[in-house]
Length: 140
Image (cartoon, rainbow, N blue to C red; front, side, top):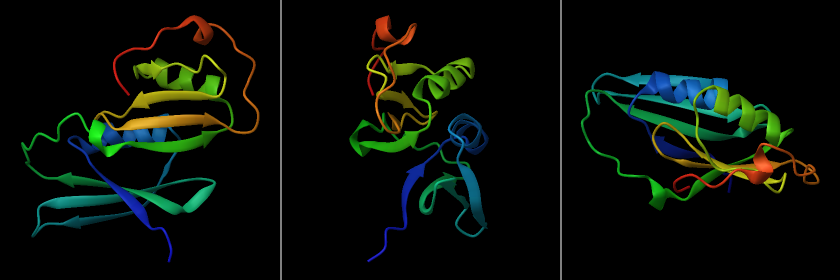
């Protein structure tokens, strides 16, 4: 058995690609437009995990409400510097829902409200401001 991908429905493909690619550093692996089904599939992978993919599914002209996506659980990514990626995402306007107060773990949400867990590679970084005194925001 081989793990292939997790699928996430997205409302705005461009906004989601900006979050996943520019924000988190994932790369687009392939894309498939299906005109007869009125949807686009975009497959993304992390540079260090090319075989584990996220499939973004964009249903054209859909007004379906996907809900808060809290029932999905979360996607998790190991990162080289949790403080740097949180600062980068925050500069992009992403809310850091659970700041990396411990230098090890943080949570953010994608534009489609998918929880994203960020885990520091190796040992936790020493607690540092502004993160160590930052309160949680919303749900993750």
